[in-house]
Image (cartoon, rainbow, N blue to C red; front, side):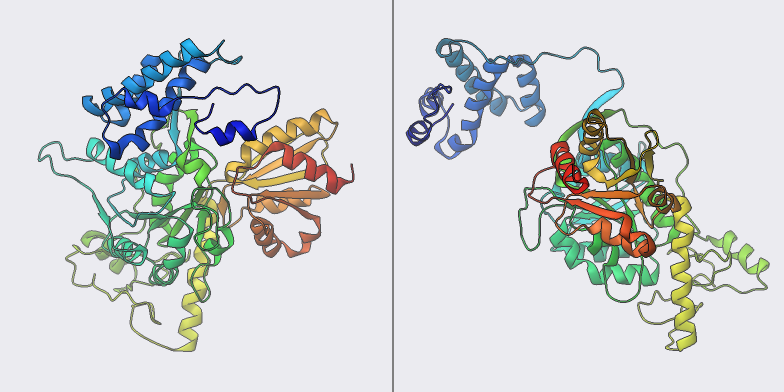
Length: 506
């Protein structure tokens, strides 16, 4: 099917029959403004495809009605072109395609959604109150979904007023700065971006880390460096996210692999950020974020919102009583690395403090004392030990007596599972661990210990997950081998199988 004589001339295969589709002729039969013809030309393709694979025209009308939000004029205009292309195809083609589609039966507890939509809804159900952002592919869809669902779910029933704010900033620097300001003020706050935007946020994320302000950052990864391929997918921001900002620091990173985990990790990330008082980054990729996937119906959060160690007037009075009248914003009372914090609105006379990005003591007073600096940095690092118990555990699937392990994360999951089946057919059993969070769980080190060879599978050129695992367990690095691929397309099972067998010498 084509719309150019050059394609017909270039295609000389005898097993292919060429059908010239008269796109311009079909459009001329409809009253379409010239400035819109290039857009609605795609509707001709939809009409032809609907005939070839038997797509129900009522379903197409429903999809258009959803897309145009029930506006009859664009719906009817586009539908008329689709119908014309369908009628032309029925008269022109000798037969429809060999493979047809048909409506499914009752999908039971399954839905379809993009990862961006799942993340937006999960954030709302997690109590998100504030989002500042700047448009960037492929993260814009996450904010679009927030804007769609916020009005439905987060309006005060009595006053009708919104209980949320979504602010488009002038750039990513401003977006993350506003997000940090809202987080400091006590709001559950997040932003969403992609690799280039995350680069711009680096210094501000260091500020949030050191001032211990909870925020969530969604990074919907695309292909870089530079502008790269903004409409292609990759897992190449991992090491940057792990080390983002200058100086000594450690960051929380969550790695969902499907829409169900996008929803779950969205609401959990707000609890994690608030509980640890630190930026929490959630990394998905364009493939998961922008495309629609089937998954189970989202499960409502199974626990109340956790605001972490926030003190109001009575809480602060209790802390003072229990600690002989002593309290400071950065004092580690519970010896877990996590201090207590107050937020604006607390009227207790002892609640105020300066949030400093410079050196400070337990009472938020400026200092450059070397001992205090080291003590503060060690305390903040200690939070990461506490964090491990709060993060999603790795998913482990084992076969019988396998000497080969596979480690992956994110959207390579489907390809890895298919590859394991193909390898098993060839008589090669494998075990599989999917990383879902950083800092790493001890189970990951144990998994490496249990296998002679562990292949780390990832959608980037340099093996960024393998690099982080090598830093985590340098004594076991000799067991790690890399299967990495970065061409802008999703990982395939065949690529994994071929490269694993090649490295195994089989």
